[in-house]
Length: 226
Image (cartoon, rainbow, N blue to C red; front, side, top):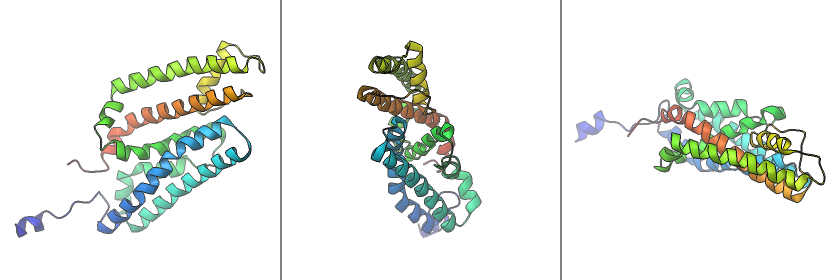
């Protein structure tokens, strides 16, 4: 048995050792929390509430990005083989490079990439196979389409007294809001703001789901199969 133990040392992720594995485990819970905070940060920011709420959303955006930056720097400092680790953890670098808060508004939708960090939990569950299947994507696409149509109609209904909008304006607004690209149409009523938050949440979830389905096999290579 002793010969078998010597021949089969503990297996770590590529580029890592015992020390870096322990540090990665310590960083995982706060990083999952930071990734989850992306949802309220984007939802509040895209609703343009002004005042303290918008300041909080801006601060959350910076806090989340700095958290990912600190984790990346910390891991590069402790892993024994940096290039190997980066090869198997490319999203850690991609999130830091592509989602800084200084990007122009047109590129802020890239913040949904931060949500891919949550896949490290999802991929451990049977649910992930169903969510990221073609059937799951079909249901998600149907929900997104219904949200565009219904959300746009509700928005026009709430805003008809303050803005001269037609059905196409509502659909255009819903699409640009879901993708967090933004437009020159903003809610002026409480009802319009509530609809905007709901549409943003559905949009963030759908984009993250679509990106996650594409990246699932890509991320599966970070750990060796059992």
